[in-house]
Length: 284
Image (cartoon, rainbow, N blue to C red; front, side):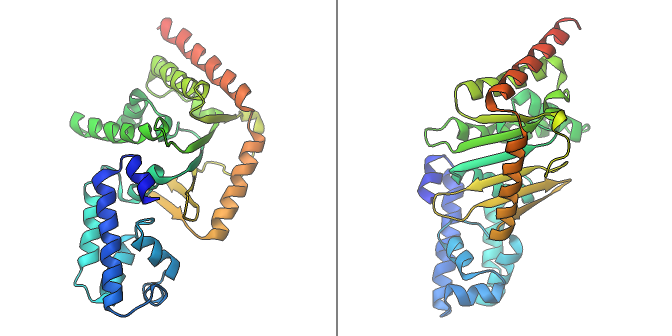
């Protein structure tokens, strides 16, 4: 999967991630520990240590710190961990997820109120960041928008993952960036769907209660690693690796898809709402 990631353009950051894994393997073997033995000492499974060493997964900072303590490497892995994410434009809790998006073979998302980042236009992203940072200078806003746009090409790549999004109708109806900006945003989603680059369904207001009330959900599958799930709240995110938990989130997503409108009806609704926004923009 590391090679797939290189094809998708993670470049030098993935190379640094691979260096972390190579160093971990070398120093573990010098200490005479198996993957399982090291895993038990740092409170993860031996399989996870193997995935760290193969650059399939990147450990969290606390794991890197415990590796240093166990292998007596004088903070080497914690410093390396910092190097891996320090130049990331993403918040700490999302940086790993941004990496995993580039490696995934399938991405499924549920968005309760905001268009998912991979589907956002620059205008929509800008309005979202301005709403959260009303006093930020222009350079900061532009950097954030650029970082979000840098994720989007994965859906146009020749080796792009299967991408399936369920959008709650609220994400279509909440006006972000004005009526004209919303028309462009929904037009963009419609074009991506018509070009068969993404599969989109809309969960209508009429569906009522559903398994992910008010919660975002992202499911990621990989060629040669276990699937993961990601949920996000205010200034925090959770990357879920436990197989039983991931299985439950997948079941919830299946229920969301079952309750949503068909892709054809969803596309018609998206285009209809876009036209409503256009008419509104023309009268203001």
